[in-house]
Image (cartoon, rainbow, N blue to C red):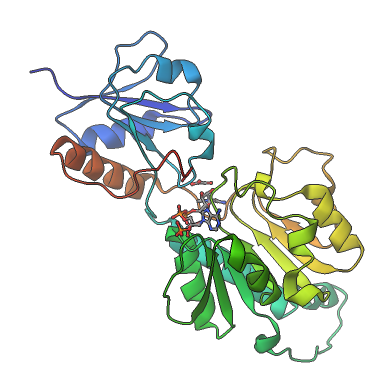
Length: 312
Ligand code: NAP
Ligand code: GLV
């Protein structure tokens, strides 16, 4: 019997260490980097593959994305029998919890202000703020959002969560569905976006929604760590410039890398990071993908299979 074939197609990333790791984890398989015209594979490990890659995979059983978000993958025409599998945490959720807690605490404790004053040699205190006045709302309570919600709750901030289906998470007030969005926004002052990018969530961070934070009072803060296309950039700038929002920390952008002249780079109330809030960890990811390929071959269920209709 021919060995199982695994192809690797990682656009803009170097594949060598992935090939080496996958060969070590799956010695029974034939693991090769994809090149146009190569023999079709049984499973693929991918990041942003071109349509041609998929067109050449008529028998593909598993398509393993080396990220959590599958929005770019679902825009392609996929072989009908192929199951798309996302990374299921693999070391990302703790990184995301670090990032969001950092952004939240930096804003709440006014560390930017202290840093600026320290650079001027000034020793001055700010009035302590009440964390009850800074309820945090997390949009998306999936693999990453739930971990973030639990981490934020440990710092004793009030925490709200919004998802499609209601959740029962200790210390988190659950809001669900379109009908729950207004009440969720009104009850939240710091908004964290951890939604998948789908037709329902594209542009969800816009003037009407962001303007409803904190019951419409000024002083809201945005942390977007999901996808740039969730946010309407001009609306954010208008809300910051009018004083309705106090600031934003953004890790993801509609165009990445963020173009040199984009106003986010220089806006005094915006902090930019280069899509670095939760990096793919290679060894953890290879171990997870190898385990799932073996489980799939045995006909067992695997976690993280994407529902293409739902979009995540
Ligand atoms: P996930 O496990 O699929 O969770 C998605 C959550 O969003 C679920 O709670 C889901 O609700 C909710 N949701 C989806 N559509 C909704 C809608 N229309 N209305 C309300 N709630 C909705 O995803 P994840 O692993 O937590 O990752 C979330 C996103 O983070 C990824 O899709 C990716 O884009 C982004 N990400 C970014 C980075 C980075 O470095 N910046 C790294 C990894 C991931 P239900 O629970 O009810 O289904
Ligand atoms: C990164 O953005 C991911 O989706 O894993």
